Image (cartoon, rainbow, N blue to C red; front, top):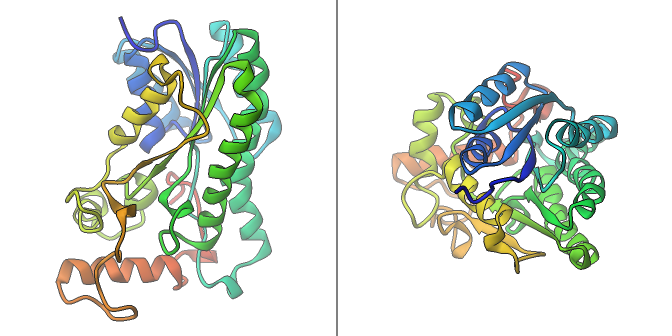
Length: 297
């Protein structure tokens, strides 16, 4: 028997990265999955992966910042599979990058719409369906950037901090309905959200991310999928309002590199990652100072 037998899940941003890895994992554990994403090609491939892993899945084209689209994704789950037990608000992007005084209001608002409004919408439409079946699990992807300064761009960090506190406040409201609300705070995960925009791609990203935490390897989608599976399953029946950190020890303390502030470290690998962090925090390396979805080159 699978840990999610008989359960139905909607996973946003499931066409690639963490969402796709989680969808495949959920399908293998017995869940029926709605792949909700704007990326049609990736979403349909994720459906095939889920079916190959022994599960049921459908693709629903979804703009997570649009209320009607999120409502439709939840409705698709009920129409196709009869119920909703798990809502995983995972979709995201880098959003506005660069100095705060050069960030446009348009880029700021677009970032928060995709990173924060989407989570609110997922909760809003999932909760009534979960009440009908006597409970459920809402999971959202936050970030260590919502816990620690300097771990992400400004708008991204602000949105992820808000996701963490929204998780806590909604958990208080719906606990009586046996609906659990938790979020996951990943560290450096080697996904297209990062590696698609770095010279050297996945291989170089793997090497760079391995340098930033005590466990000397990059995070992988499966690391987050394992935590999502725990939160989606009955194993976490008494866990709600929690921000589960899955970061290889990054937030345990100390500097990201152990360097003197403002000075580049001496080892070549650390120098490369130091430059990467400075680019993420300040330099306008993305056209328009906005890092969009990973499938948009």
